[in-house]
Each structure stands twice: as structure tokens, then as C-alpha cells.
Image (cartoon, rainbow, N blue to C red):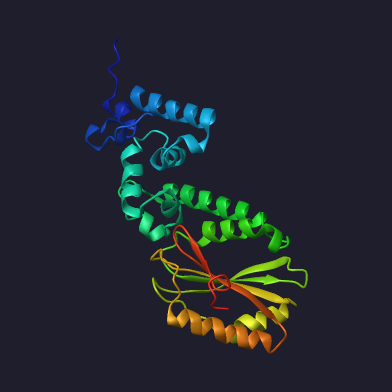
Amino acid sequence: MTTTPHPSAFREMPDWLFDLEEARPVVLPSRPPSYLRNHKKHLQDRFFDGGAQAMPDYELLELILYRALPRADVKPIAATLIESFGDFNRVISAPISRLLEIEGVDLAVAQELKIVEAAAHRLARARVMQRPVISSWDAVLDYCHTTMAHRETEQFRVLYLDRKNILIADEEQARGTVDHVPVYPREVVKRALELNASALILVHNHPSGDPTPSDADITMTNQIRDAAEALDIQLHDHLIIGKSTELSFRGSGYL
């Protein structure tokens, strides 16, 4: 006697296994095209052979972008970033909100760029902290340019020195707009007393790139100088950082 399978035996399997209309394709990982792999390797070889000095800004930027987008063609993204912000330094210094406006830039890309910026700042800062300012003046200027020259808004910092002119603290006091930053002389001097500092160096940037002081810059500097001298604290200098150069108030006769 032949037994016929009961139709219900086939219904024991979930219906969704056979619902092809609901099936979703599975995207398997794929390697980037050979021309992208070759380009990436070429950049890496050039970097290891000649260092960053042998590479233009956009190629160094490509190497960073590959870390966040290993399978993508990052060349057009790098070109757009350079075109939008001007150069490598301004790209890594750009605010995250501005970076995310660029097509192809996501949070992973922005994070890689900000890590590079933070590393650059930390390296430059390590060369000046706890060292005599006079003997490391070039390093101080390099640090100020690294941290401030490429910002899109004004930033005001104070370098606090001890009696031996050793840099004991570097603190951001205020951030402002593209052409103004609020500064309160009382707060600057108060912080100097808290740190037991004997001298100050004021630093702020001009996003326009021109370090020429404004009337407001001169007035503010004189107010801080007077408040500091009343407490036997010396104002050594006020540096205005432009894009490619700086202005020293003392060297220019303003102090």
C-alpha cells in the first residue's frame, strides 16, 4: 500500500522561507577595483620612501581618508576638501559641522581628521610646556601657529610663566566670531594669581590671515597690562597669529 504524504507536512516550514517577494539580497564584501588598490599602494610607497614632504596636500589627505574609507575612491573627496577649505591645515582644523557638509564625508572621516589635528597639537605643545620660553621661542611660535593659524573663528589664549620664564600653563580663555573674541582682563589676571604665575604672554588669531592689530586689540592689551602690573605680574608680549606670519606687540612697539 502506497502512502501519500499529507500536504500539511510541507506547511511545517515557515512561510517566509518561500516568500521570494520579501527576500532581501545579501551584499557580500568585495575588494576595491585594482586601479584603486594600485593608487593607494603607490601613495603609501611614496609616503614611506620620501615622507610627507614629498607629497602635496591632497595626496597626504587621501592617505588619511583611506583609513575611514578603505574601499572608496577618496581622490575626489580630498580634492573637494582642499577646494572648500584651502589647504591641508585648514581641512584638519575645520569644525566637524563644516566637514560633514562635504559630499562623501561622514562621521568616520571627520573623526580621522580631528585625530590628526589633536595629535599635531599635542606634539607641538609637548615641545614648549615646562620649558624656558626664551630658549624655545621658535617652538612657542610653531605651537601657536599649529593650534590657531587655521581656525575660522578667533580664539584667545594665555601662556602663563613662572619666575624663571618657564611655561607652566597654556589655557584658552575665550572663543569668538570671525572678527571678535570677548576678553575679560580681570579673569586673565585672576587665573595668573591662581597659578602663581609671574608673567603672561597673550595670544590670539586673526582668521582673515592679517595679523595687524585692531584698535580693540590694542585697548584690550593695555587693560590687561595695567591690571597685571598692579599685581606685580609682567605682560611679556601679545602675539597675533595670522595664516603665515605673526605680529609681536613688543617687537612692533605696541608694548
